[in-house]
Every structure is written in structure tokens, then in C-alpha cells.
Length: 139
Figure 1 (cartoon, rainbow, N blue to C red):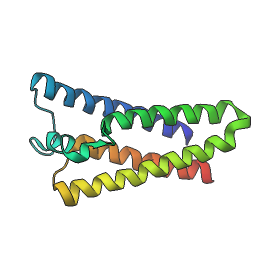
Figure 2 (cartoon, rainbow, N blue to C red):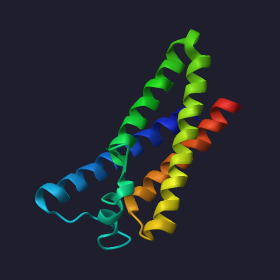
Figure 3 (spheres, helix red, strand yellow):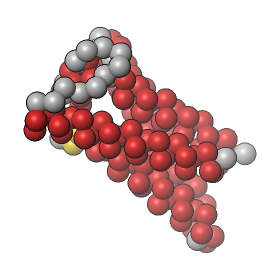
């Protein structure tokens, strides 16, 4: 199960970096963002006031989350005397990410009424990481 979490983390990092790069190119070179589910909706979602949390772009926060979770899991696996603390930290991290993901899905569905494909991919990845984390750490 831990390997599944690592694969999901890699997918999450790739997705978040791709979204960040597209958004950067949109602002720097006026290149339209690729959004398979609606023309311009990704840009409108990412550029909305909900696209940042505490002044930091959500895609960058996602990258930090995935890297941080990787570090926590590696310490959990390779530093036995820290495994209890790391397992609790991992559970807290995946739970917080899950709740934040639900909040962002709510914003897209009911506030913005627009969908960002890459944000939805991130949501699916985060939900799967949450489920895998619960199964791994609570079994």
C-alpha cells in the first residue's frame, strides 16, 4: 500500500507542476491554459480569489504537500524510533489535505460554478492518497 501512496504522490507532483507551469505561461506569454473540460475554465478557477491560500498559489501548496508527505513517509520507513510520530503526522497531513480538497471542490461546484480539469485530477489523487493512508496506517 505504501508503494501506491508513493505512485500517487508522483502523479500529484507532476499534475501540480504542470498546472503551475501552464498558469505561469498564461501570465508570462499569454498562452492559453489547456483545459479539457471547458475552454478558459481552468484559468478562471486558478486565477480566482480561491486560487491562493494565505497568498500562496494552491498549485505550489500542492507541490509542498507532496514533497512534505514524501519526506514524512521516508522517515517513517527508515527511522524506526520516529515511526509512531511520523505515522500520526502522515495521517494528519492526508486528512487535512482531504478536507482542503473537499473545500476546493465545493468552491468549484457551488461558488465559481466552473471546473478546472487539473484541479479535479488533484482532487482525485488527494482522495486516493487519503484512502490509501487510512488503510495503511490504521490497519
